Amino acid sequence: MSNADGEKAIILVVEDDPDIRETIAQILDEEGYVPIVAENGQEALRRLAEGPRPRLILLDLMMPIMDGWEFREQQRQDPRYADIPVIIVSADGNVRQKATKLGADGHIRKPVGIDELLAVVQRYCA
Image 1 (cartoon, rainbow, N blue to C red):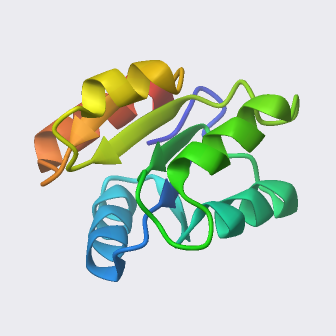
Image 2 (image 1 turned 180 degrees about the horizontal axis):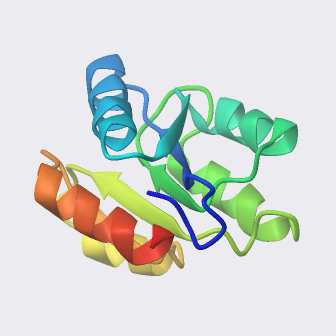
């Protein structure tokens, strides 16, 4: 989806499961967004540093190398990225409480429904 300037919204997808990561990226791409993918928090921080700046971050919690908790802590401490909205994407039964504890802007439970995913993305990228 394009913003008022005609630029497509960039979305950072941070997910260690390659099938889920690529499926979400494909859905976003087909809907006119520009997905950037990372398979863990460390790679996500590198993608943020390299640019371009995403309009939204879809963040899994349980990942190797650097999990979503540690990524979120570092993201919130960096003034360049602290204001980027984060949606927690997790199969955890307590995802709502964990998203609140992390100061996230929202959450989506896995398995991710396409309509729910697109509704959340559109809310932040319209």
